[in-house]
Every structure is written in structure tokens, then in C-alpha cells.
Image (cartoon, rainbow, N blue to C red; front, side):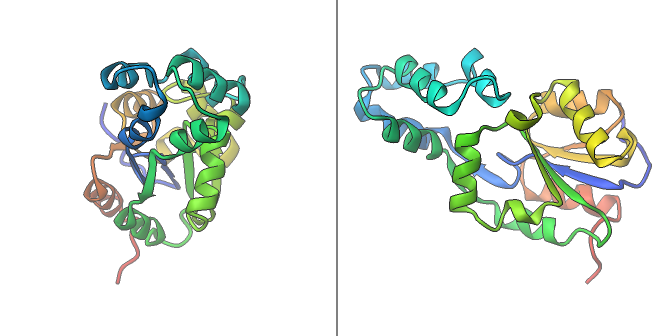
Amino acid sequence: MKDSPIAPRAVLFDLGGVVLDIDPGRSLALWQPHSRLSAEELRAAFHADEPWCRHETGHLPPEGFLAHLREVLALDCDTDTVRAGFNALLVAEIEETVRLLDAIRAGVPRYAISNTNPVHVAEIERAFPRLLPRFDRVFVSHEIGHRKPDEAAFRHVLAAIGVAAPEALLFDDLLPNIEAARAIGMQAVQVRGPEDVRRGLADRGLLERS
């Protein structure tokens, strides 16, 4: 399905992999000395399983999720170490993309839509305090109760911002999310790096002219 030619009235950004650099290997490196699992077993065990998804939709509180991580990763450490490892995957702002976010034409609101959780949001606010305030509004899965690529996640955001699907432009790094957004009529660009963001904005006339 091709993008709609309608000029976007709102731009939606995923966080991890789009405006924030993510590296799960950093989490594994921090946890490995505390785990009874081999490096390969630890890597296989750290994935978005059912408790992870429940945590990201607000149905499992942080303490329950961190306890789950300790169990499934066979960790012999305290909760603070489990949390530190989980937060270690948040590396840094992707500076070029953040600059593009700031360069979007005046009058076009920018929103964040992210599959995330209260543990990571608290760390983002601590480690990157100027990032989330750049958005007109931040929609996180554990607050809205839906995760991408669930159609309900996109429809929730569209209803909240009062924009029709063809008038919304999504930047996301994961193809299933792109396909789900396009399936309901949204414009969507898969992001492999900042240049994809630049091109997607420029092609639609959304960048301020210097």
C-alpha cells in the first residue's frame, strides 16, 4: 500500500530505534556475571515474552516484571541490578534525528508513540531529560493499554489527537508496525537511520526552510 498524498497534519515517532539508540547487548553484558545461564542462553531468554507484553500494556507492575526477569534470566542479584541491566539498553539520543524533530515546520505537531514501560520511561526522563518534552504529547503503551502493531494502539492515538489516519505520518523502525499503520490508511516510513527520517519529512514538505 502506497503512502497517501495528503499533507500530514501530525507526525508520530517511535522512540527506541528511531530517536533513541537501543542496544540489548549492554543489558546482557551487565547481567551475565550474575546469571547461571550461558551467554547464548541468556540472549535467547531476553525477549518480549508474555509478561513483557503485559508489563508494556500496564497489566504487570514494574516489581512483578523485574521479578520475572530475575527468574527467567536466572539472575542472582538484587532488584536494583536487574533494573540497571534492563535500563542499560537505552544508549543515547540519536542526535541527527532529534535535530530533524526540532526542524519540523511550525504548526505541525509531533507525537511519540512507543511500546515501552514505566521502568524505561523513568530512565529516559532521568538520562535524557530534554527528549520527551520535545513532543506535543507522548503516548506510551503501558498508559494507553495497547502495543504496536495492534491496530488499537494507532486508533487510540489518532482519536486522541483528532487526526484522520491518512493525515498522520509515522516513523518506526519495525516493519510490522509500518505495515499495520499503512493497513489503516496512515502514512508510514520505516527507519533504518536518520536519513530515512530526513527524506520522509522533506518529501512531504515538513522541514523548515533554512
